[in-house]
Image 1 (spheres, rainbow, N blue to C red):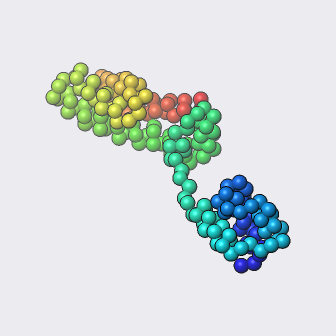
Image 2 (image 1 turned 30 degrees about the vertical axis):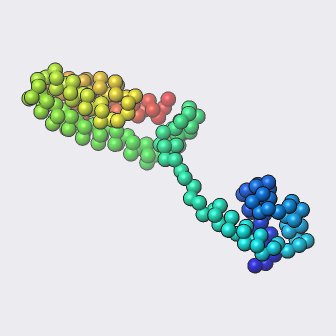
Image 3 (image 1 turned 60 degrees about the vertical axis):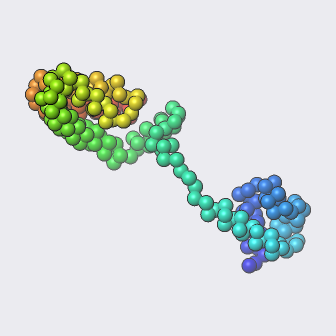
Length: 188
């Protein structure tokens, strides 16, 4: 290995660790390091070997990324940055709109009002069926903070279905609710 490459390795390790940590880890003096970096003295083989091992260890550790820091912003400024990023990505916004205003309402209404509500109503009557269907609907959304809201929305959607007898009316009402929620999220 050339002396220039050896100095480069030592320099990059000092930059990564900081001078004080480098000195204590290598058990060398500042004067020795200065002389090595200036090319006044050769870097001893055992120091170079130890430096290479430290550098390999330092750079081989995979950085741990917390997924929740990307999924759920922690403070107002990061939430604003997250929304800005979403708005810049047309594909993500379109996917969010399609999933939340078309696919989710259709699937949820078929399951909760078309299937579950009918089964509950047959077994326990209309009022109990409305409450049970709404409880399960709110719990499906798995966000403790939104359970009261989704419970109320579940009651309203079940009443819409009960009064009209038409699943399409509940799907449209559900779509409008989700569209409003997405727009409020994106633009506030």
